[in-house]
Amino acid sequence: MKVVILAGGLGTRLAEYTDVIPKPMVEVGGQPLIWHIMQLYGSAGFKDFCLALGYKGHVIKKYFLDYRRLGSDVKIDMASGKTEVLHKADCDWLVNLVDTGNETMTGGRIKRLSHLVQDGTFFLTYGDGVCDVDLNELLEFHKSHGKMITMTAVRPAARFGELKMDGDRVQSFVEKPQLHDGWINGGFFVVEPEFLHLIEGDETFLEREPLTKALNIGELMAYKHDGFWQCMDTKRDKDLLEKLWLEGAPWIRPKSKGS
Image 1 (cartoon, one colour):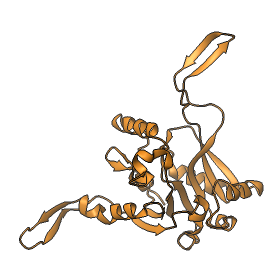
Image 2 (cartoon, helix red, strand yellow; image 1 turned 180 degrees about the vertical axis):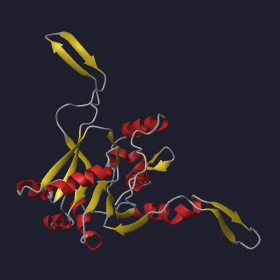
Image 3 (cartoon, one colour; image 1 turned 30 degrees about the vertical axis):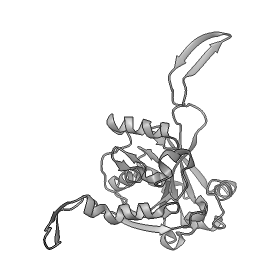
Image 4 (cartoon, one colour; image 1 turned 90 degrees about the horizontal axis):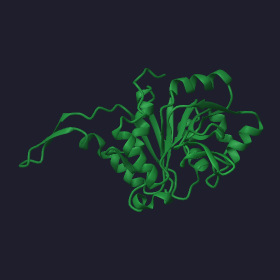
């Protein structure tokens, strides 16, 4: 089962890094965020990836082209130039790297991957967020309702403390609570190939016409996830993910058998 990752956006709110590299290549714990996302799927047994590249896509291509060599122990004969891999990098992913255009919108990028995903159900996510959602449970939920697309709904932590007031008097204060209302799109989807027909072309945003059309015809379902979720839109988000990585990386799930 294929996993589509949208990895071609400009990432303008992370310009401190994205002037040089694409947002999915911004590092957390010494590895690019896209590696963390792929680990989520790989640990659940889903290892066939399609990366929709765009802005500075060559950086992502180079990372994967060099992954085995740089992630392995190597012996080099400096006289002859002969190299020998002593210990191979522990990774068994299949990675399709597809240039979907610098200016293409999110929906258009998916459309450009039609030839790779039109034969069956596929996962879809963005290249800028991590989550501890159980992907096998998400898939089972999707299969159970038989609709065209499932969106993972999350309730992120508020950016600021929450005050409850009685006039001018503070009744309670909670530092950065999880929001109890207002579910948002968490970006971890399961999609049937029929959804591709709802996407017009390169200028189509996934989050606008296609999802609205699916909603209007009763083909959009939500899988509610109360666990960890965090995007990386700003340097503040990046710094938070670094802190969480040092504390044990709450997005890492135990390995399980996928399908």
